[in-house]
Length: 397
Ligand SMILES: [Zn+2]
Image (cartoon, rainbow, N blue to C red; front, side, top):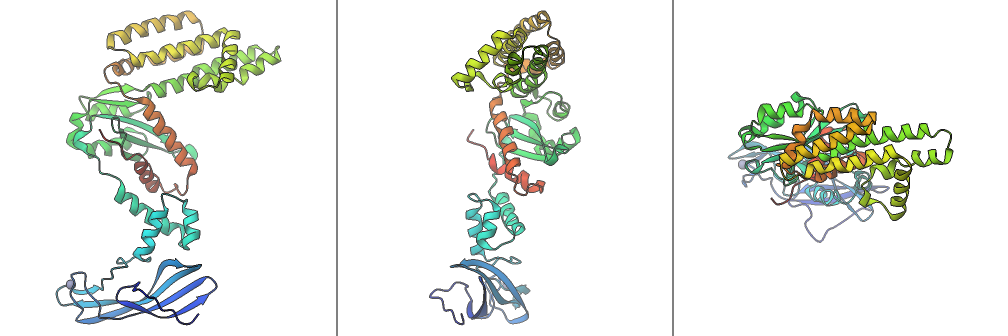
């Protein structure tokens, strides 16, 4: 291929002079067709120096295209020595604006690896373009409107490091993501919130975290609310799972019954309304045959009701009722759990006055886990955090 002419001006101020082709690679050499211009609009008095640059362009047919052009440093009568302004190439960019726009259109649709194959760009280059796009598109929170928060932690790669996410509990916009889960790690959020700390009324979180102390330090009016989702998940692990394993061990001599109990984990932990008819039948059979499982299963459902009480008083009497049944059950893992939970009772009763939809928090938690599993390049935490913020832009209040 020796000569290419284009019917339209693809590179304003330049024209192709010749092309080189090697396999699927096409290099288009450009030359200027007019004197350079400054960003201020003035024409160059003279050229200070010229640098030969290689710029990636969108593919033409099956060819990956590189432009080679003399990019001029010019002397502007007003601004002095500046790099000439090109409408199709940002200063210091190594891809044309056209290619960047194309990549930005593909990013919500395709994994980075596929875009790399389509465009010939390096994985890192695409990631950089994506970071710029996300930073531009993530809406700035309206801090003056934030009243209720939800805080949660999640494991980063390998599970040894953690990160904390803070969301607006009403709009579900992610307001902040940071590495770590200590009081010190989350302090920057409250510093950013600044004077708006005074308007925070309630904060939903998991028990057993350092968050509550830090919240109380910065937000004097905020009630800490322990959310249902975390308590129920903990109950599943520490009570239902424990009792199920103990029951299976006790059934050592009845292999069929033992297998039934061992396989019951999933139906026991799932919400009943999410089970198929067969699964529900399996669950009923399991509960009928194992008294302890039946007790801890029913007490979990009763525990959940604490979060839906109409008043603090009602919540306290519900708790007393629950506590009594726990004591009478004689089931040790259950009693252990209840004793621990009792220390956090204030944060559960508070949910009667500050109803926070923890189902949403659970959804957020799951979505972050899913994003992590898909994990393209989230070793870069800054990128991962941008992705999280972009995934939860919030909805109308
Ligand atoms: Zn100028």
